[in-house]
Image (cartoon, rainbow, N blue to C red; front, top):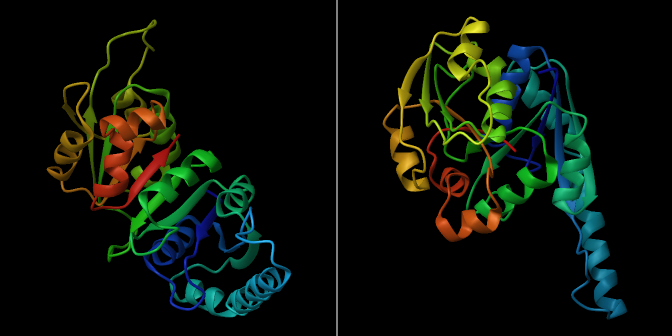
Length: 267
């Protein structure tokens, strides 16, 4: 991981997402970019010229305030071991701005915070699907530090779970303990010659593999995950349609709302 993007939800008090992102960038000797998006209405709530002018003035004020946060962010990063940090402000749709920035990065770090519109389950799902870049989602209350000592991998054989495992290798490789929760799906095509345990072994990572039944509900999967006491959970995101996730309480939706530890997702 050479380039890391953190989506900041504040221009003054940098939260848990920035804390972890700075430590991670320092450890990986990576370039860190802090991004703050000043959202603008795609469809104006009104066409009254006076109101529109007021809204534009508010956007300009927020952007100017955000741009003044650059020095504070760089100092915040340096104090946490990251010597290569920069700050960027964008105006527009959160997902579109984040997707454009994410395309130049290997990982996006965000905060899960139900008290903030950008940190709720729906917004995080939009970001994951819109950016198509691996995401590290850090709970607002997270007080942990990197490296993550105990990593749990939820693997069900989907393409998304393979992508997540491959992308998370730099984080998994420095853990002291790795637990693999492996649900073997019904075969739909010829199996690959190696599985997740063999892949991890190729990277010199010993693993405690535990079988779990395929087709667990999101709640059941989270119970299995929590029982392992992870500092980080790695899994694929939205292996089936988002509508199915919403209707059936799927794994991604449950992880976004229930996972007590930082969550590494790839779609």
